[in-house]
Structure formats: structure tokens, C-alpha cells
Amino acid sequence: MPYCSHCGQEVERDQDYCLQCGRVLRRSDTRGEESLPDYGGAGWGLLGFCFPLVGLILFLVWNTTRPRTAKAAGIGALISVVFSFGVYIFYAAIFSFAHCMFV
Image 1 (spheres, rainbow, N blue to C red):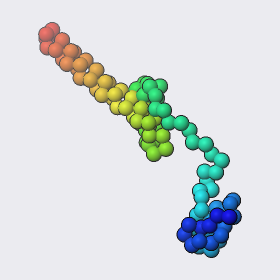
Image 2: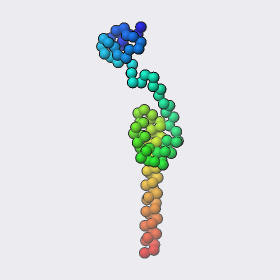
Image 3: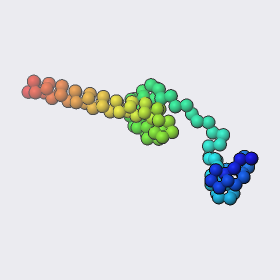
Image 4: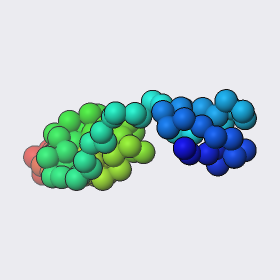
């Protein structure tokens, strides 16, 4: 039989809490739940690039549970925003230059 690591009380194998001291023996909310693999991947980065708001939301939600996937989605969103800003600056410069030439 196992013992409580806090008070030394003998406990049953399927107990979640020590009856003597109340200490949690194991997490009852994760019992039977398998963790999802965290591979990251270019697909999540592409999703973040095409839909930056979705990439940002996925980054914020998965930051602690799936850090590699969150990083891929966040980097895709960041690249998308920087790329869009660069395209905007490029077109603004071209159109302002073209406007000055034909005035």
C-alpha cells in the first residue's frame, strides 16, 4: 500500500486525497486523459499567416499547453502583419511618387 508523501498516512491506490491531511495525492482532472502531441508544424504557421487574428488567438490559448504549436501560429501571424505593413508602405510610396510625377 502506498503512503502519503506529506504526513505518512497509509492510503488506497485509487485515492485522490489523503484523508489525514487533505493533501492531493494525484490530479483527478487528468485521469484517463491523453496529452496531445506538440509538433508545431508549418500548417499552423500558414494558418496564422493567412488569418493573423486566428494565429494570435491560438498563440494566446496554447501558449502553456502546446508551446511549439502556439509559437508556429504566433510567428505566422507576426510575419503576416509585418508583410502587410511592408506592402502598405510600398504601395503608399509608389502611389505618392506617381502622384508627384503627374502633377
